[in-house]
Length: 163
Image 1: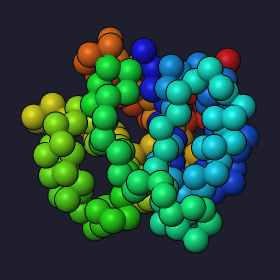
Image 2 (image 1 turned 135 degrees about the vertical axis):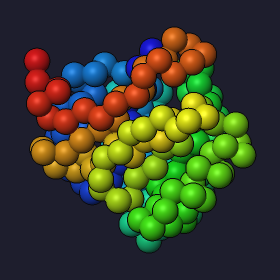
Image 3 (image 1 turned 30 degrees about the horizontal axis):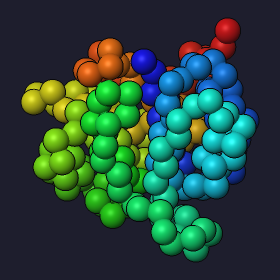
């Protein structure tokens, strides 16, 4: 199964549409900064399950009911999903990784920095920041699962999405 991970779209919907069309994901995770972009993509793709958290730019733009962190199974794997600003990810990943491990996550997903990052820790925890999908030169993350295990995780750029 394929999980497409998006973040920091900032009203740039064209690259998001291209990524969804090219990847044909089973699920999409949007990690904030323009939560309403994820809502628009969900409306355009009702056959795909969307999982969304707000970012620091969303608090004055939307209803305050959306949780800033989610942790549950998506496509059979437990994902810790947050924008990252509350974890101070621009300074360190320490709090993010501690919280993800504490929740028993297989992957810690975050955004906020606009810098793509994908690495597996020594204990097996995947750490993924898809970068920013808000421009045509942006990036997204892709997680592939077998229904219970993460098989791989990587960053995709525009050239990776061309058919």
